[in-house]
Structure formats: structure tokens, C-alpha cells
Length: 403
Image (cartoon, rainbow, N blue to C red):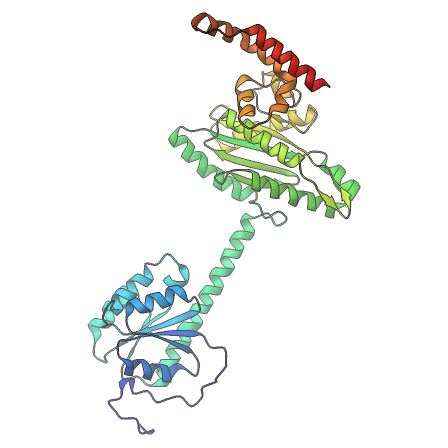
């Protein structure tokens, strides 16, 4: 070598004369159990890269796992603890994309063809020999780093495009397209497991009046607030989406009719309780909800959406700020939860969820519905229920609620 470096020097790489202290340089992980090799590689790359050293594969893995700034790896193959082949395989089997796709350059002997083939099979990107010069080494590193950066940028763009394609820009909720994908997958699973699936279609009441009175920016704010409270109110396994205009939908797996009614009432109450202000003006908001269920109302998502939409229309026709869950022939579907008498199952659900104020106006009707069952129970029980006392207690509650 013209610079006087001995011919048998590891890697035969002279120190660079173009180092740029303080410059922003990508991190490169150098893995070798030989301090001499590590020093030689460090001196060769430090002008363009910021070297980080590891003595064996296990130490390298710890550094790679803890420092996401590392962009490229140079590794020997023969090392204690974890050799180069094991390190490469572990990296390529990682579930972390940053680690799994990192470029790996292997250092081998000039004639070690078998080692190179084995390293490539394990997942190495390239190799350099221990007799390569600095120019060749840096050229290979630059090429792989640039390719890796391009791939990362492409993956980021693809993720952003997928998110944009699947997300409603205003509210951040899934859009109709993405909801359909998720709901169809859930429905397929529910059919295999013979489980219930509920679809709740929701519409903001008098939303056009909000836009006309307060302006479209206020309408956008209302949509965002409603989306926020809906997302915060559903279960983790539920999917809430904005499917257009002021319409939202919830897909709820493992949810029967009673559970769907409880969920609908919880959503309705949460939106009604919103304290929305825009530019100093209060904007009261309520929603109407239609409920459809698998398998009662169909097996396909389109069938459930159509049934839920029909019941949403009924809820709005009957005064809004209510839900509709009954079959077409059942008059109950036309009533608001605060106006109609709930079924016994619904009443029990409201008791469990502390919605007692909803029950008070309907206690007399509920008692009449339950009286035949209570009389039957009295015939079979050793300690019968005093129906007269029950009626008196209900009358007292009625008197208290009417004051």
C-alpha cells in the first residue's frame, strides 16, 4: 500500500482523511470478536458513518433492539455467544420491520465461497472480503444504505396511503370501505362460531339545522365530538365508523339483542350528555339509532345494514333521540326508550346499568306484564310473593317521580 500500511493488516484499510466531526451520520453496527478488525472497520467508515461496536452476536442483538437509529450492520461469521449466521437468522425472523429489513454486510475470507453461500441463504445482503479496500467498502455501504432508505420511505408512503384509504379524514374513524372489510371478517367468524353480531346505525338528529344555524365549521366540530365519544364508549372489540355525512355505524361481535339495546342506550346517552360549544355558542346534540342482529335479521352485512337503516328511519320518524330494535311487526320499535315500556329483559339490563330513571314511568306496565309469571311462581313457591305489597311500592315510586 502506498500509505505504508502492512500487507497483512486486517482488512488492509487505511484510515480516512475526510472525517467530518459533528456531521449527522447514520449509525452502523460493527460486529466482530476481534478488536483489531473492529478498529480497522471503524477507522474506515467513521467519515461517513457513526460506528457502534459489538463483540459477538448477542451483544449486537441487544444494541440493535435498543437503538432504532442503527441503519446498517457489518458482521463477522465466526464469533462466540452467537455467531454471524445465528445473528442474521434472528434479525430476519424479527417481527419488527426496522430490524427485519436492515441491510447486513458479511465479512469473509477471499476464498470462502461456502461461507458466503451460507450467509446469503441466512439472509445477508452482501459481503466484503478481509482484503477489500476502503473505497469498495464505502461504495457497498452507501448503496445498501440508500436502498434501505428508499425502501423505508416507500413503506411509510404505503402505510400512509393505506391509512388515508381506510380512514375518514375529518373524524379519524374508519370509513365505510374499511368498516365493510372489518365487519365482513367479523361476520365470517361469528357464522363459524354460531355467535351473534349486532349492527347499530346512527344518525345525528337535525344535523342540517346545525350547519344552517351555526355554519359548516361548527358542523365539522360536532361530527368530531360525536365521533370521539362514540369511539370512547364502545368496547375494544367493537368497530365504530363514519359512513357518510352525519351517519355512523357500529359493528359489535358476540352481541345479542339485549346487549345491543344496552349498547345503543349507552351510546345515545353519551351523545346526549355532550357539552358541545363552538365559538361561545352551545350546540345540543342527540342521535337516533337503528339496531339489526345476526342471525335474526340476516347473515350478510348488506342485509344487516339495510335492516338497521330501516329501523333508524323509524326511530327518527317517531321523534329522534331514541333507538329502534324490534321486529317490523312489533309496535315497540316505534317508541323512544324514555317513552315506551321496555321488555322485561330490557328492564333487567337497565337495572344492571343503573338506568333506573328510565324504568320509573313504566313500572306499572312492567308489573302487569310480569304478574302472570309472579302468580305462577307463587303457586310453586313455599314463600310466595305478596303482589299487593309490590303494587303499593310501585304506586309510591310513581307518586315520588311525579312530584
